[in-house]
Amino acid sequence: MVKSIVSGACGTILGNLYTAKASGKRKAMVDFRIAELRLRSFRAVPLELRISFSNADGERPSSCLILGDNGTGKSSIVDGIEFALQGRVHPFFGVSTRTNIGRLPNLAFKASGKCMAEVRLSDKSLVMREVKWDPSRGHWASSSPDAIPGFQGACFALRREDILSFLRASADRRTQMFAAFLRSVASLEGHSADDEELIESAKIKAEELRVKQFAIAKQLSMVLKVDAETLQPLNPKSPLDSIFVERGLIRNALQRRRRSLRLKPEEEELFDLRNKLTAGAKEHQAAVAAVRDAIKRAQYKPVARLVAKISGTVSRDFKRLSPSSSFISDIVISLGDNQDEIILEARLGDGSIVPVEHYLSEASLDLLALLLFLGLLREAASRGQAKILILDDVLQSVDGTIRLQVARYLLDEFGDWQLILTFHDRFWREQFRTLCAQKGHRVTVRDITKWEFSQGPILVQVGADISMATRSVMSSDSPSLIASQAGLLLETSCDWLSKSLGTSVTRRPDDKYTLGDTWPGILKVLRRFDTSTLAENVDLYFPLRNLIGAHYNEWAQSVTLTESQQFAQVVLDLWDKIWCPKCRSTLTRTGAHLACRCGFVLIGKSRTD
Image 1 (cartoon, rainbow, N blue to C red):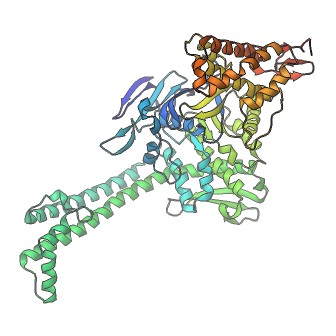
Image 2: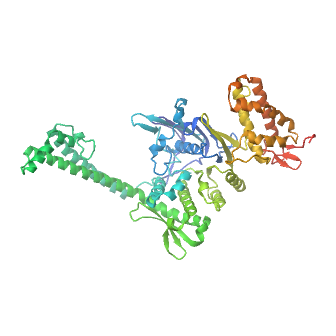
Image 3: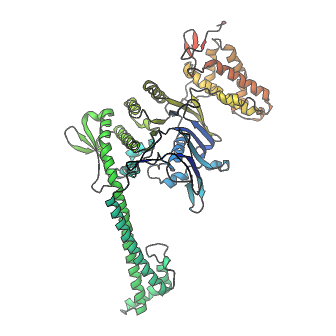
């Protein structure tokens, strides 16, 4: 174990970083898991947000299922993890990494402090990375662009945008997207000795031409009496042409040519040097391009091996999951003749081979794109990358008829990985959660209840005692703080109870409900059981929640500290009655009783019912 402090121009990365080498390849010595994320002034988080990936203190970090509406900050969480661990955010298709980093600071809250993302790993190491304005470069920059060991291979976060881009992009641009992922894994192999020799030879030739070009520039500069460094004929900002124009050399040359007169010897020398300089610059440019091509060809050789390695697995998995598999013998993944394209083809039952985009449906193309990325990540893990996979609303792109099959496939093939998945469909999240329970795959469950301009995403842990925040502020001397926390606890309690009790609400077009929608139905049920007094007490203080807890106005000035504490206490009393600390569930109706899932909490009907 090596304790590392890596400083950059804009910040610091701290942590206990594990590295080792075996058989010439980097191997992860620790089974990394993400234990906690902290964001500050980062994208949709104006102030600070902390997320634990454990259900309890001291518990090993588990997979996490995050539910939230579009625009509530799910992708900000994903970006924060990726930025902290890999020093970048994988660019949306066609957007540069630098442009993406420029989108990370929450500019509306510059005064709140630095823009940063911090991840605590399961080995207790801490990784922190900042984004700050770099005045020397004129753009936002990361404190360090380097990924930490265990996260140096492929991008481990896959977004729905990546899948959808596969359909929208032309064939060659699709290749670029997948190749960007493949190269990052292939780079772990390094270049062969032959490739290194070719690259070095190309660099030597380019350097020789640069020296030759500079010698001509120096000779010309002595005649013109200017700095040789400025005489770059292919640079739009070069003063070479303007010097010839200002000194009348070009005008004089044109006049002499019209009169069929020869140039003066000194003028001929200048134009001869100028032509040699221009020709030399073009040769040097071609040599530099040859160096880039040599490096590119060297990079794509391991890519070809990787493509061949994952092709069979992707084809097998596609046939296992796709409704089109009965018509397809296999999926063929290969590189083009120039080794710079990834070609995706389907071999049909009759032996004919067709491009996948000409034969497969959009749903099947979505599935194929997902399996390609997953195949790559599996290969990256075999080379030492941490077994962490983040899918940002990706499964929403998978056709509904096979979504459960794909979910089972994920849990079968990546069961020993830490999975972090985001959803905007509650039913689909609950289906996946049920599958996790069936497979024995431990998960934490988080709901983003809403996004607020001043606070950002508001998260609650599903299946957790959410009353702790309210209890912690009971000793505060701020009526508004106490009432707002109690109001949030009541709002979340009612959201969960409305589902577990199956109470009725007036449907809304977007299926989004407020406390005013859910509380009346819950109150009606609770009045029939031995929770009636508690429910009546909450109902008595209900106006206080609107007065100060959620909608501040001048009348809130009259609310006393005692009233706020009394409101919070009745909400806590109700929570203690309807929440089971053992099975971590709210009450459901079971005949003549209200009971939790395990039966530890059992409430009978009211005697007056």
